[in-house]
Image (cartoon, rainbow, N blue to C red):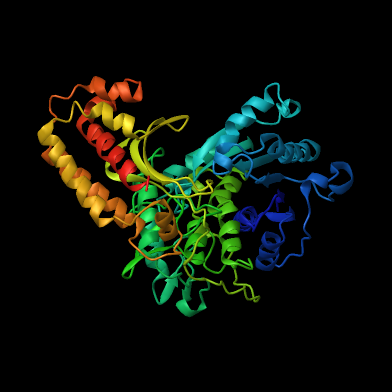
Length: 522
């Protein structure tokens, strides 16, 4: 029997792939206690937590057998774009990759594979060619990016795979694999007899753990999720709720009830996040697998950080040099994952927050003034100011060069000559409507409402009312002769979107500058 060791083993995604492939797991190394316990309790092992950085390869890796395969997933935190906007400590992350390659160099396995986030592909290329990893250049035969859904994982999850293994053989398996959708996973887990969509296990629903759902999103949480996904100022739009006729989006290690990364689905009378079992199945773990995190967030973290075992199964199949005509689906494996006798901690699902920090941030686009490609009007606050500051602003540019323009009386006055008498009556009508309905509203009260420390109109109700007025003004004003140069002079830039949306932009500049002066200068 072939044998392998697993560096940075996490909760067992690599080990499960070994078991499914009939490969002996000789040793696993992991430093996070909860992840290591999850690994131990699922596989009946007794591995101690080990910081791989402290391993002395010559003293600590003297195995009695030749190691056939080395695999693993060094921590991706410092490389992920989700960490500090992609500004993690790259050199800190490279320490783990260096140690991984040092182990490979010392043990000289037949094949080896390292998995990580896609960004590491470029970092590896750079560091192997004259950088801090140049010593190991001859070890790395291939660096590729794969989408796990193409290998039967019910999740669109792009990962970097680097190493020395039969890449062409691994790629050839895709032609024999069918996609599994988010909808199929949810449907399978809803039945009285639950049939694992990945492995075919059939278990009575009452024996499947971690199926408890959180309470549905509140109206405010629903709105924040919808806006962050469908109207994000910079990033590509997502569907809301998530579509069921395709593999899910990436299951992340960290997400909240209102994060852009959260996968949100229709529920009875509302929307909800996925539960622990749904995320585990999307990541490719059997319905019998148990997650021994002490909190809901730690379970989400360990699942989101895991390597999908269905992906590792096909990687091991290529290492075993199984030909495409002989490849079998993981459900055909002789290995059946027994549910451990140990009971996992019951998740405390909690309730939505009712009050928030006094400096809670607000930044959302104005309805009917969202133009894509970073061009939009926003209502936002300055949570760092001692006295609450709220205002409408105009943003344009892209994620690497976002520019903003404060909407003030200078802009409004510069547009007065363009807004003729009849149009001015229309603008004044809606300015009066907002002024009277929100005559007691100011920055302080808006911040108090947003942090749920006061009663009054909801902030999104206010924002939607503004957007409704904008829509009505655009429909009624006569600004067909407006010269786009007027808009370009305000932003000091030429832009195709300025020409395409010049009337809406002028309405936004004029109307929102007026409201800034009337409401937020009180």
